[in-house]
Every structure is written in C-alpha cells, then in structure tokens.
Image (cartoon, rainbow, N blue to C red; front, side):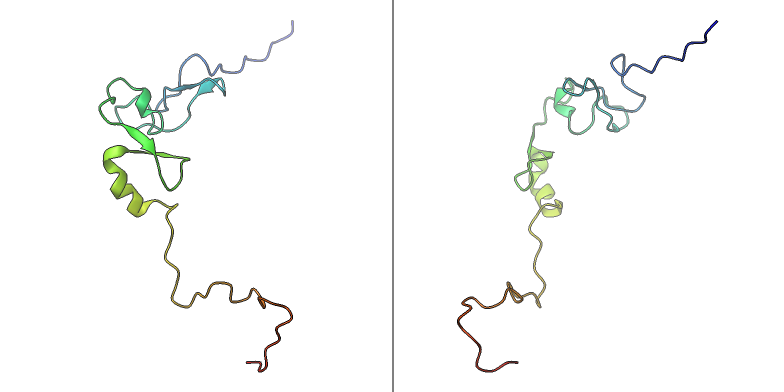
Length: 110
C-alpha cells in the first residue's frame, strides 16, 4: 500500500485566523493582511465590509498605491512617507552636474 501525501491546504475555503476575509479573485486566495481586533477586513479592504460603509476611503494624493479615510486625509498628508521632504540647508541642486556649456571653461579654479 502506498501512503499518499497529505493534500495541500486549500486557500479558497476560508481565511486564516486573524487575517482579512477579502477574497482576491486575481490571486485566487484570501488577502493575507492582519486585521484589527473585532474586524473582518484589513484597512485596504475595509470598504468591502457592510458595517464600515459610513467612512469613505480615497486614494492618497501623494502616492496612489495606498488609500486613506477621507476624514483623516489632512492628518495623513503630514505623516505620509511619500511626501516631499525638505532639503537640508547645505544641499545645492546640480552641484556636481558639470558645466552647462562644455565650451565654457572657468577662468579660475577654486
């Protein structure tokens, strides 16, 4: 008698414990992001939940790869990692870019 190998777990039956219940059709599996206590969906898929329809999620204007709640947009824009960071005082744009016109040769080298 040949012992058969155990069948691999099917990912379409139900989501893992503490994971998002959103089924990603393209990947043919459930989302694997962690959910908050007492929730069924992660932050990305919270719009799919019936109990959270009151709050609307929109794309981040700085980086459309993620979404934020519309009522928390101003707070998010202050701390979003995709925002334009201030340049240090010692930064000079194109300092090592070379000469603008190669025929121009500086008279005095520093």
